[in-house]
Every structure is written in structure tokens, then in C-alpha cells.
Amino acid sequence: MKQKTLATLFFLFTFCPIFAQNDFKEIDTFLEKQMQIWHIPNISIAITNKDSILYIKEFGEDNSKGNYLIGSVSKPFTAIAIMQLVEQNKINLDDLVKKHLIWFETNNKNISDKITVRHLLNQTTGLPKNAGFFTPQSQNQQEIENAYKNYLLSLEADETILGKTHIYCNLNYQLLGQIIQKVSGLKYADYVNKHIFSPCSMKNTFATYQETQNFGLKNGYQYLFGYPIKRTFEYNNNGVAAGDIASNTEDLSKFLQMLLKNGKIENDSLLAKSTLKQMQTPFSNRYGMGFSIGDWNGLPSIRHSGLTKNYSSAINILPNQNYGIVILTNINSFYAVRKLMDGVIIRLNKQEKVGYIPYEIYVRYALLGLFLWSFGEFLMRLNKWRKLKFAFNYSKNKKTIFWLFVNTFVALSWLVIVPYFAEIPLLAMPVLQPDLGYALLVGTFIGILSGLVKYVIHSSTEEKI
Image (cartoon, rainbow, N blue to C red; front, side, top):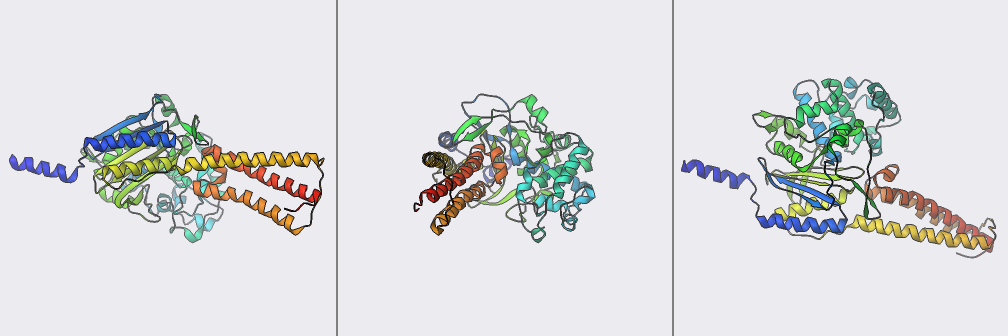
């Protein structure tokens, strides 16, 4: 008996994380401070080992009840569903996508005839990132397939990086959702509910808009130049496989427990250990199959983050430390949720604490200031032109023409710089980040127009710039 007790204690101290109450108090203080810095209405967090939830808490003054949309944290569920079908020999990873989706064809047929299921999982299809912001609107399956077919025909995959380079594109995982339906004979939501959610006892996780609305969603918010504004959005079920599953920290903790136990659930397995290992082996750019893999502050990490129009999320497993973390927020910020995750990991592992500067918030302030300044300058120039009775002349002065070109170039450059650092295509910005998107589009237009008015004024008065 004594030997069994010692063996149990050895197991607990060796394989289970031991956190002091002060660790959680530090996390409480950290998250409360970050909520103020980032203007986050609510944060929900859970820390779990493979057997039980060690810490779970909701922060915030918004008392609305319900789940959070988890964005691209949906992708691991889609990848697991595909790999279950692989284990059942219903799919081969090197099957051509056309084998299961006969309508699959891009602008370059020679390339699309080479794209496989593995390429979709690894996101190495060569499809451009901005293609991931398309979702069919119909609920009729034939119309959905036609919409995908027509859209794919407008795209050209990059053959030089096919199977080599990771380009994150939601369309890859939407197509995997279509394959799951075709091969299993079940709708995507029915499949993941039967084969993933239910076995993991995730009783309040949903993959349809209707179920999500019936259960309820925590109020979602979007930044308006740094300040959270409550916004609600409708979506359909066609994008769920890539990013619209709704869940909560308790259910996602159960999902992480399954992953920490190498696919085991009670007396069964959701996936074989070897299959999970394959999924969690990075292929390109630290991405495997539905998971990002790599060091986090020097610690091996298996993770994914997610962003929707008004929620952001992150899951992170630290396999050597034998625990996982779930963080859900009801604000649309990748950067905020990543900094929250980083701060929690640092405190749990007694690493050197760092301060986080909310650059994203400052960029929003700066963009608002720049927009207002540009608009004010435009109004002053317009008034000056009015005093000239809107005289319209052309100048051949090289210096005047040069500065017109510079003004136009600077205005247009913002359309490239901000989407690049925000990691969002320009045309998707008004939807996902409306303050940035509309400020960019309207601000650029005003900037160009202001430069033209300045040119006309100088041409009319023969002033030098």
C-alpha cells in the first residue's frame, strides 16, 4: 500500500502541474489590468491538466449569458474529423481533392488536378490568403457547390509553392468541411457533434448558427478607434468548418484534456496517438494539420488562435508542462488575445515578466488622428480653392507635378501598409475591422483629392510648393 501511495505521489508531482494559489492571483491581477489596457469587455479563461480543470474564471462587467464564437480554433475540429475518416480508410491524405469534390477546379486546371487532401490540411494548396474570405450564402447544397465551383474558377493557385509553402487560407478548411459531408454522408455539424463534441462531453458546443442562437452568445464587440462597440452579426453554416463554431472555456478544456491524453476519452480513443502526432508535426511555417506547433517562450507548444468579426480566442497546450490553456474574449483582436496568452504562460512558468504595449490600440488612435488631420487639411484647401472661384488650371512645373505624385503615392501606400501589419486583406477590413477599413478607404480618397486640390491651387496661383 505504501509503495502504491508513493507511486501515486510520484506520478502527480512528475506529470501534473502544481500551481500555487498565488499563481492564479497573479493571473487575476494581470488579466484585470490587460482588460483596461485593451478595453476588452470580457475575458473567459480556463487552465486544465489531462484530468481536470485547475482554474476557470470569467472577467468583465457584461453579464450576458452564452458562448463565444471561437473563430479559427474551429480548424482543429475539422482536421480531427478528416483524420478520423483517414483512420477508417474512407479518405487517403494523398487523395486528390477532385476525387471527393468533382467540381473542384481552379483557374489553372493543371494545378488544381494536383491539390490533395493533405495540401488542404497543411494549407499548402497555393491558394491566396484573401480567397479565405469567401463563403457561399445559399443553404441549398447544389447551390453551395456551384458557388464554390464558380469562385474557384476565378482563382489561380501558385504552382511554385504547391505542397511546399504554408499560406493561411480559410477556404482550405471550408473545402475540408465539404469533403467531410461528402464522405461521411452527414452534414458537417452532425458529424462533429456525433464524433467529436459528444464523445468529449462538450455538451454546449455548437456548429450551426441556429443552435448557437438558441443557446445564446455572449455580447460581441468591435473596436471603433480603440473603444469597444457592441455589434451583432448573422452568418450561415458554410464557413463553420473554418471558423464559426461556438463554445466556452469549460467545453474547450475537455477538448484539451483529450489532446493531453493523446486522443483518449474514457475507455476509448477519439484518434490514435500516432495520428495526433502526425497532425502536430509542423510541415511549413510551424503549421501541421489544424495546429500551429513551435516554441512559446522556449516551451514546446501546440496551439491555434481565432478571430471573428466580434470575438477572438486562443488555445495552447504545453505538452512538457502537461497542461493546456483556453482564452476567449468578446472583442475582435488577434494581438490582444495572444498577449493575454503570453502573460498567463509567463506567470505559470515563473518566467521573466514583460510589459505589453497595446500597439494595436495606439495605431487605431493614430489612424483616427491622421484621418481627422487629413480631412481638416482638405477642408482648408477646399476653402482656399473656393476663394479662387474654383479656378481650374494645369501646371507643367516639374516640382509641382513631383509633389502631386508624392502626395498620391503616400495616400495609396496606407492601403498596403495597414492591411499587411493587420494580416487582413484590404477588402475584408471594413467587415472585420471597420474602423481601420473605412478610415483607410475614405482617408485615402480624401488624401488623393486633397493632393489634387493643392495641385490645382498651385497651378492657378503659380505658387511654389
